[in-house]
Length: 143
Image (cartoon, rainbow, N blue to C red; front, side):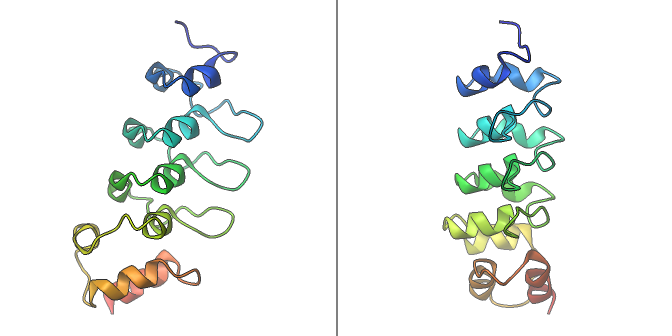
């Protein structure tokens, strides 16, 4: 099936990975400002991590497809360079969402933040607290 502006949202909702090949995948948004990338992220499609807009296109609430993947527990999000940088309208990053969903382990954090010096358990607690941003987490790690 040919992917068009008229059918790209429906095709993404039907889990058609062909939409990733379309140049519309990050440009066309539905009523909720969701792109096909957001929709595929909701299904946990890890292939979207390779798309250059996975951390750039935002919905009404400031969620990127990267946030959506993290919210649904896709731990591969940890490998993305923006995991602790891109924030939604409430200030949460995908890293916060992974922690909130209890998807992070000490081993995960050791791999992603190898320069840590404090006890990893404290970092897990810090990353899950509302007032902590990834920047403050980095200070904890580098302290």
